[in-house]
Image 1 (cartoon, rainbow, N blue to C red):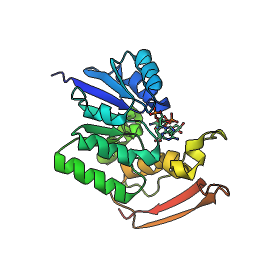
Image 2 (image 1 turned 120 degrees about the vertical axis):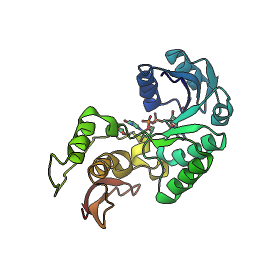
Image 3 (image 1 turned 90 degrees about the horizontal axis):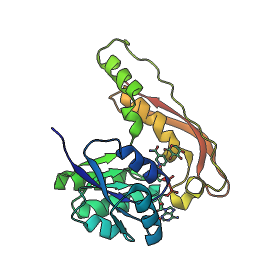
Length: 221
Ligand SMILES: NC(=O)C1=CN([C@@H]2O[C@H](COP(=O)(O)OP(=O)(O)OC[C@H]3O[C@@H](n4cnc5c(N)ncnc54)[C@H](OP(=O)(O)O)[C@@H]3O)[C@@H](O)[C@H]2O)C=CC1
Ligand SMILES: O=C1OC[C@@H](O)[C@H](O)[C@H]1O
């Protein structure tokens, strides 16, 4: 059975570009529209990826009846309002990581998606790496035995002008941007929630965003 899904791309930045290139390899996926705050950005993006309709507002994209599912590739702080916008227009939604800034925002969008029976997912792509899928399978089969400790880490040297990483107002900081990957890995290994969390790290002096962190999760299995 082949399914056809018509995608709308909300935000025409760096990762949206990579995502659309990836979608070209997916059978049945068609990108029918894109939107940027700036029409010329949307048009350039549209020309690059052969997208028929380009909008200069996110609202217009979400209201487009030709769109089945909206991919949200804007900044961390905008994921929540943009997910709400797409859900309001009864679109399925795939949101870049982190899906929201906090639990309250997440609960809100999950509740609306459930109520409207719409698909909602965080684009935590590492969950689908073949190696990760294999580890999960081995764990489920009990082949690796009881796990006592998981160590996972990720680091990045971000450029000084990478505003979305360094500015608090844009949802900056390492934890939300890349710390989320090792934490997601741990949550893939254990089904249980941590009973205790201990974190230490460093906060930048100018913007108060986390520069690095070490997090210990105590999980009772
Ligand atoms: N899954 C993955 O591997 C990756 C995921 N990401 C995630 O994707 C998201 C976007 O990252 P990335 O593509 O690097 O970001 P970009 O800096 O390319 O910005 C993405 C879009 O956000 C909007 N935007 C940018 N700056 C502002 C601003 N100051 N105010 C309002 N809107 C703004 C723009 O939308 P417009 O086009 O309308 O102007 C822009 O196209 C992040 O949440 C990040 O965590 C990022 C990299 C890798
Ligand atoms: O998800 C990500 O992975 C790669 C990094 O470049 C980027 O900042 C981050 O958002």
